[in-house]
Image (tube, rainbow, N blue to C red; front, side, top):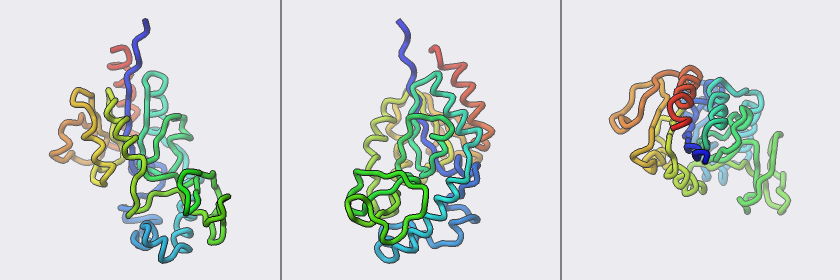
Length: 234
């Protein structure tokens, strides 16, 4: 009887997309530097000035459509040939999907989808700008399918359930400082193998991870090769 494939869960954050040219809100350059986060990325901002918020996310959508997956994205997609893989991402781009990953949970929404302000159950593919007056099929204003600061993260329980089942956990592109997503690492079983790819030194609370210190594009392909070698048949 064939052995069941090990479950690999990846927690990905802005750092992996940054290597494809998409800046994170903590960056000191790029799109975010031109805006106050409180004016464009909170639910209060949406209520106060929806036109500004829509304009900001239109600019981000254009960036995402121009970006291309990098070596780290493609290496993670390669894992699906050998393991049962789920990617839980804080990123709102579709670079994981475009690189070939098929099981991706977006904690903070997706920039290429929209939804009604009154109904978050129905999502619509969008590639163009959303303007005030653009209505969803239910007759209400369309908004980006983004979880803004001040809103609940509806997929957190799903993500926690997935992490609890992991045999191998990989953290890449996230500082593990932004909650509630950062807390997902505590759901990982003690006996699971844990890896983190980060260019910085680890904090004390992250010492349980095996650290691949360096960029995602440099270290993720090396880690993937190691996992295939060491864990595929174990």
